[in-house]
Image 1: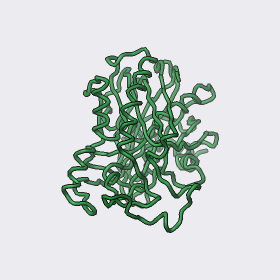
Image 2: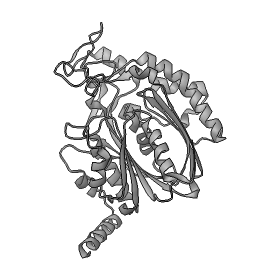
Image 3: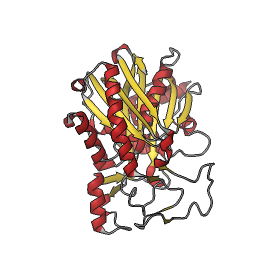
Image 4: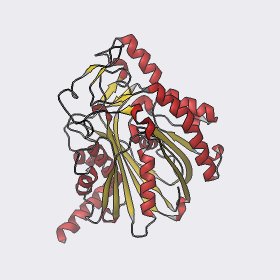
Length: 381
């Protein structure tokens, strides 16, 4: 897919304040096993949301930070796409509640995308496609996951990998953005490689599906409503498909590896990303990593890595290659121009404190003046 004159002008992200230190995550496993797993996957810290904090709360915090740090008229947000596989409810769509909570106009289009690790790039493709319509002024991509709530703490194969986070991206039209190339792919024959078997409508919840049980000869435990992953098969899939897709997308863009300023990989694990980089002879100095401090945050990992590692580095025109893969299986790649993209500081969402109160501490005098002026105007009206 090719798009011209559409791009991401600003980004923000939010993570829970609670830090999980993986080397101390020894409640169910002996220290030597913990050390072995942590060293292999490269995840030393993660962020876990508390029981009351949902993906939408993290996205709300990121979006509010985006609004505070940039001059954005909320009335001009004509499209909101919420990306998550851990939504607030089965219905309604979480995007609708965020439209209201963020104070966006009723004319704003809002809907959810349920996909998985590749979903931020899929979301870009959907939003960029819709933004080709001149009737839309600005769009928000909100991407949030609380994967800590769907993977069991007694299954060694997944207990040390996943974390929580949320991100917000503002999409606008401008000739400065040039051309974006996006490749989207899917292979449903491998749907069982990463799955939560029960809790949906194919296998509805029962007391049995909620009960943790031993699932293999190593004593790993999980319920049918907790996620599992066949890591070896996922690895074999990735090393075959991802380099091929990256090369194809680069060729379509007319650029060479040397033309890329940064390469943003899905933060699945260090071993996979290092293998891809070596196979494609990529400059590792151009590949920022966040897996060691945030873990695998599913679809949030790509935007979270950009916000975490590229603040102040996207001035002028930069060319980024994005790639992600996962649940489905689906995979996606993009070669996209980022031009003077404004990156906000990461917001840490604390337990039991309203997000607006936390963000208000970050107001600059100018932002406070803008907010007070808007409030006065509303009161006068």
